[in-house]
Length: 395
Image (cartoon, rainbow, N blue to C red; front, side, top):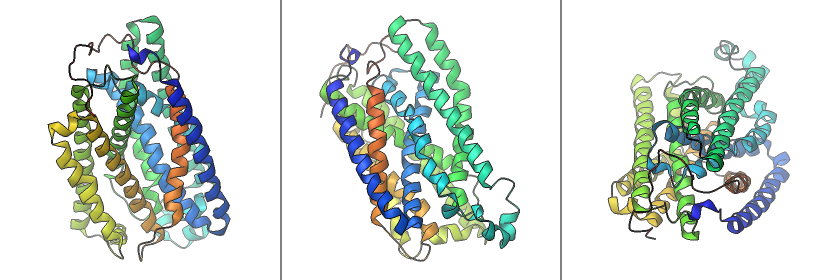
C-alpha cells in the first residue's frame, strides 16, 4: 500500500518552508507590537483561536472515528492524529496570551473590576490565576489524549495487535466527554470573557461545531494534496471523499443551527446585558462581515455540499474546504475585533499577518508529526479494504 511509506521529501520541504515563513511573519508582528500592543494581542488572539480550533477539532474527529468506526476515516486518520499532536506547540504559543491577559480582558484589570459591580460578582471565576490554571488543565487533557491516540495507532502498525483497536475506542468515549467540557470552558475563558458582562449558553457549542468544521476542511485539503503525490492514492477514493463531504455538511449545519439559535434567542429576549454584543457586530460596517459569513460561510458551501458530484471530486471538495477555512478565520475576526473596535469596522495588517505567522508554525509542526509513520493505518481490523473501490481520485 502506498500509504506505508510517507511522502518524506515533500513533507520535509513543507516543514522547512512553513517554519521559516512562520518565524519571519511572527517576528514582523513582534517588532510592531511595542508600538501598538493592543492591536498585536487582538490579532494574535483571533489567529490563535483559529489554529487551536483545528488542533482540538482534529483530536475530536479522530476520537469520534475510533468510537464509531467506518472506512470514512481511512484517508484522514493519520492527518487527524498529526493535527492533534500539534497541541504542545499550541500550548507554547498560548504564552503571549497570558502575557497580554490584562490588555485583552477587562476582568483582568483590577481598576476595571473595582469600577464595575457586575465584574465584582464574577471574580470567583474570572481571575488571572484561575484563567491560567484552567488553561493548563485544558492542554494537559488535550495533549495526553492526542499522545495516546497517536502512540497506540502507530503501535498497531508495528504489531497488528487487534486489542489496540479496543484500547483506542475505550479512550475515545471518555475523551469526547472531556473534550466537550474543556472546549466549552476554554471558549468561555478565551472568547466569551472578552466582553464579561455578556453571556450565552450556546457559545461553547458554537465553538465545538466550528472545531469540527475547521478540522474537516483542513484534512480534506491535505488528503487531496497527498493523494495527488501518491501516498494516499489507493484509499482516497471518490466514495471516501463523499463520506467526508457529508460529514462536513453535517458540521456546517450544526454550526449554522447553533449560531442562529444563539442570535435568535438573545435578539428575542432583548436584554440590556446581552444585546450590545450583537449590536457591536451588526453596526458600523461590521454588519457587512456578518452578511459575508451568512452567504460564504453557510449558504454557498451548503449548496455546494448538497451536490454528490462536488463531494466525489476531490479537487472541488478541497476548494470548498479552503473556502470554509478562510471564512472560519473571518468569523474569528468578527468574534474578537468588535470588542476592541465597537464603533466602526477596523482591519489592521496584523489581522492578516498574525494568522499566517501562526499558520506557518502550525503547518511545520503538522508536517513533522505526519512523517512519524505510515500515512494509512496498516492493521485496523474495523476498516475494510478499499483496494477494490473503482474510480481512483478525479481531480
